Length: 252
Image 1 (cartoon, rainbow, N blue to C red):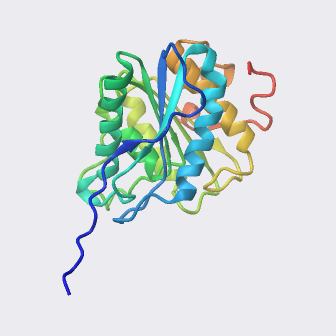
Image 2 (cartoon, rainbow, N blue to C red):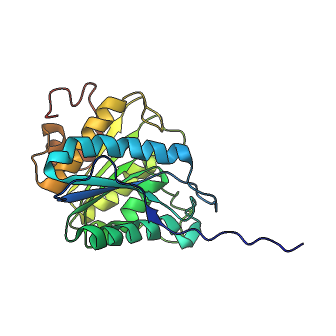
């Protein structure tokens, strides 16, 4: 019996999040979580989580001309030096340029998608990166240190739960320290007592994400906590606590 070949999948952008917008002024690309090694498709749960975040962002930024797409990877695995998710994120940024022209792009990644967002930030269209509970390798696991130069000139926000048992929050802190040396427009918020999915403080994390993305893409003023986090020297601006109730008094 002939052996069936494994189907070759292509990177693609998911359907537009929300209604079409006649005047697109900015794009957020949602990068779902993945696995360290895998040739399987992205988990439907990971895609759903990314799309839920995208809906919140697009709803808040629709009047500014914000649109969003979830990136569908070829495979869910980073797969060592292949760094497939980072390549797929760069392709997606290029596809945005083809579809929408010269508009700013925010890469918003969750888990392994956060790592992909940080790696792909060097694309000329990208002006900002949001990384939620990013998966980052142990220092002794990497062939070379995680790159940071590509983040120069971008605004960067990392958010991590202090009780995350899947992705080590200390690794994202150490990474943020290195990024801050190359790029002052970097901050990191800690969500105390929350886990990997950031479910316990979902509303606050969503409000923080909206505040950052709309500020970065459309030059809107950031909230005071975000402004303070950017301005504070390490480690203060990289261990900024996300206050309970954040966003209740902010703009919708």
